[in-house]
Length: 172
Image 1 (cartoon, rainbow, N blue to C red):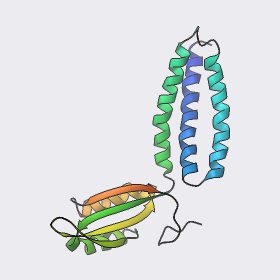
Image 2: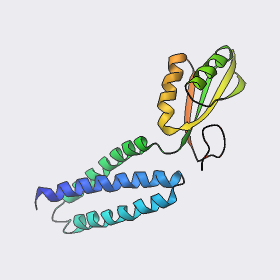
Image 3: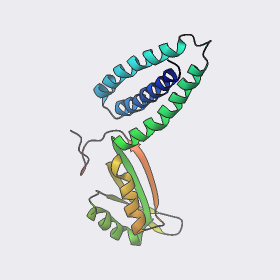
Image 4: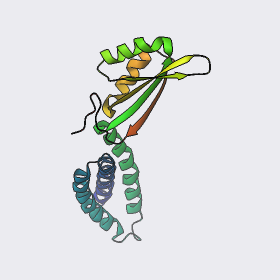
């Protein structure tokens, strides 16, 4: 079997850990059934991979290295897959000078995003705080749009649990 055993271990572990990452994302975003289905296949793969590594592990320590490499790469590729799926919503807040707020709000709304405006006070200027709940897949596009319009705005992004109600965010 030779090198093919190590290749199997690496790629199977990459796949299994990537599934783990995606499963966790689904569960934390409220998709419990899909998470459970993925978990079923994840455990089957884990048993086969772990079993092949543990069989005569003391006489072949390269199995452990292949397993560790697959685990590390699985985390890396799993995070890429999770970002591509981009399930769920993010809360985006943009802080701008008050005099720029109205024009930026209109610009963002023209791009198809819903915006709520709050008033605030900075150290030297009155501020507008623009609050948006948008699909995670659209966050980078929104940030690019805001930066294109106003370079020196303060932008924060945080993931959020599913929300109910609001323009463009209704969860069914």
